[in-house]
Length: 478
Image 1 (cartoon, rainbow, N blue to C red):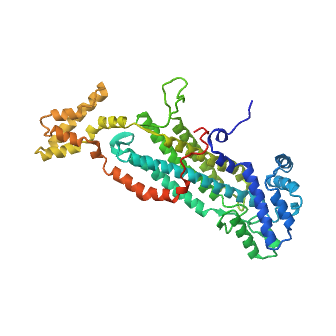
Image 2 (tube, one colour):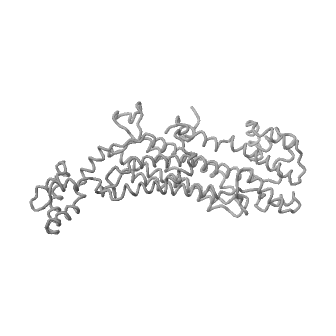
Image 3 (cartoon, helix red, strand yellow):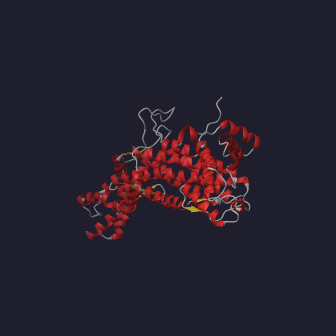
């Protein structure tokens, strides 16, 4: 029997996101942190030789996983396991590896690197979702459709205006994502409890050397900001904020999947359905919206994980307690992998999403007669009728029509009833003019075009280098 396999690894997430949270990237980053620490320590006066630096460089990537496993079982400490395994390779550098550092120097700084790089991966996919919805909204900005409140027909909007609402949610997510990327801080070199006591000893009380070391090593990894103060770890609220962002993206995706599934039931829109795809093992005719359903399922998972990181942030003790460790190993990577999968699926759906204008038009015609009553009242009053009398005649006809539709399954003959009622002074030609659906979409089309032009296009222009017609790893289960 095979061992358990994580579905995010086996089925859903992209290769680039899987690599970002892989042991290979994590532990080679640890080794880079050791290397850069030694390089800068040498630069500012510690007794570290060029030969030792070269030794570290020459063994950055040849991790002996068996030796790491051996030492971890022996020490029950992952940092010490990798430290010993690295020292067996970089023998000359072994005496100076990890000098003055603590486990959080490796773990926390690496986690921040992975979080930042993970956000960069999601940024690209998010921009492509916005790009595709923008194109969809532009194509259908003027196509009338029924708008729903409480999932009951209300008035008319346009297909493009509705899809612009999906973009609006994503712009809020994008704004937050950019903020997180811009303001993410490196932990730096703070020592065991954040006081940098070991570095004070190494540099003979020279605080400026410690600050130089910290600034330079953060720049090596592309960070402009360093936490000015920490305990042993960086503030776990950072994790909570990042996972809340991923939750927000998942909320937006779930809303889209809900809308699309509701519209697919109405046969107005449909997600792609491959030629050989099977919708149901029993009902061969079915075209189940499996992509949208998978989005919703993964979104629920990400939303639930955000609460876990909030609990960790709330329950840390003093300078640090280790009950965050196992939780963070699980929820941070899993949240990123799942959000990555969600955005891949969303891009895949949008590449070949299907709209059925004739069905949309039919649904409008089924409901439109009830939506035009105010226009009819106004027209009749213009022709000399009493407003209250016309209102009463329309009320009677609407009740009778609804009864016929719901109890007998009849077609909506409300308009014909009004035209045959001699007490309602309106001509057939005028009625046909009123019945044009575009008379009832308000400023939907104008709002959509203005929104795309002023709010969406500038963002897409700014991130034009991220827009790619090819979605990576489409062999995954999208």
